[in-house]
Image (cartoon, rainbow, N blue to C red; front, side):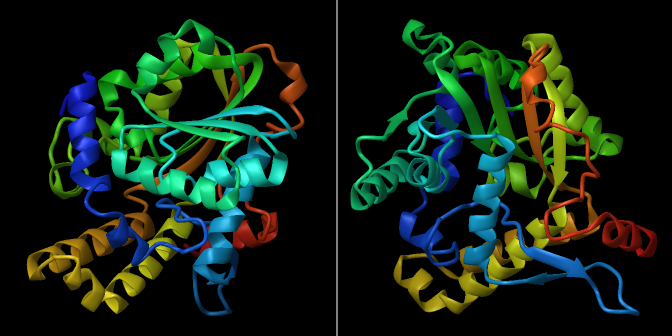
Length: 332
């Protein structure tokens, strides 16, 4: 499905994110309202079992993910940040509170912007955070935004861009990013082995749940960044198994709130469809037919960022040692 025009993208965003803010609050954590993978405290499963054991609450895991994104971006106090596809403002709020950053967020969702602005006002951060409903390409064309932002962050927004327009995303980031800036993005990705078939096909997710969506392959993202910008990939974290755990918790909370969901006007068909959606995605991340990556990009030649952007095992997170990861891989 073509996402090249703002009108088409706007329609697709409305089809999912503007269903009802109250609906999403039934299953997202109440503190961050992040509609994206959390990062749990993960340890190797006990002897005789394969995989990982995830510890802690969804709330704790979402705070850990927000800290990870800001750490990967090497955010410094007082910097200017652009949050592309800010959702309900969780990442923007955390950056402003923790670092005193001046944050601009852009979205195509009117409903999300309304609730996010309420949260900013409640936090007393109107002087640091500004949200706007605008297409990222239009935003990037404004002269006053050229090289304005020290950091650009985008958390699971790239899936709405479409394969044919990945280059436009990186072009837009290039326009607004300072010379020594960093882009950090969290992206749901499709394995290379089936990507060409997938992107030319329709499935349950890109027709029913997220109309027009396309989860790019890692190669597609890197290729687009090289062809349309001077940004180069420096670092990857793989958090796909954490997404499976996140989805399982979302599904549990969603079903525990069934009576409230029905009071919002959603019927039996909707309940069954959303249970299928959450289960379908959970299975995809468990089986690694889908993945979730945190990607760090910097401009070519910015050698000062090397200490941040060392190459690591993609499954390495602070709670795991290399020995634990290697043991898990050998047992999988």
